[in-house]
Image (cartoon, rainbow, N blue to C red; front, side, top):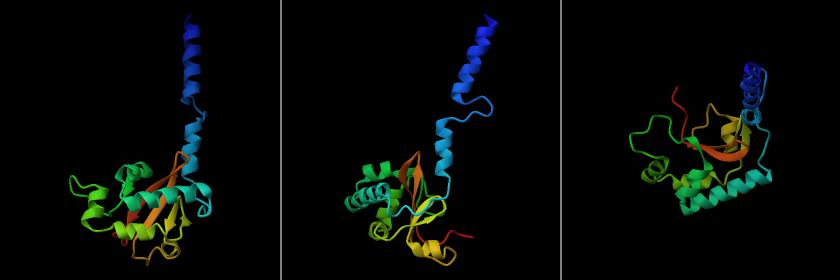
Length: 153
């Protein structure tokens, strides 16, 4: 009886990827999300995602936008005040037109992101304008950040 219990427990550990040396499919997928991207600007999945994102921004469709963004979406360099959301920030600072324009720029790879504009990718230390980044999360494209200016040193 004891042997069956140990064997069953070991089988569960192997299935869950708890046993040493085992890899589970989701861990492999997570690792793929961290690899530097090749240029995806012509990829149909990226273009479809970008098209849906452009429509959602043009309509200010907050529900659709929220579903297309990463959980840790970056929209400012400092900590936001209590109660502020990305959408209230964009409303208060009239950023929607800038976002709309940026989503019509060309995108280029930069690490794990597809980034617009390409000028930011070419010279990140001197580029001071808005920039947008998309990345894959769990195999799907997500809107990861839209910020202005340079990160404080």
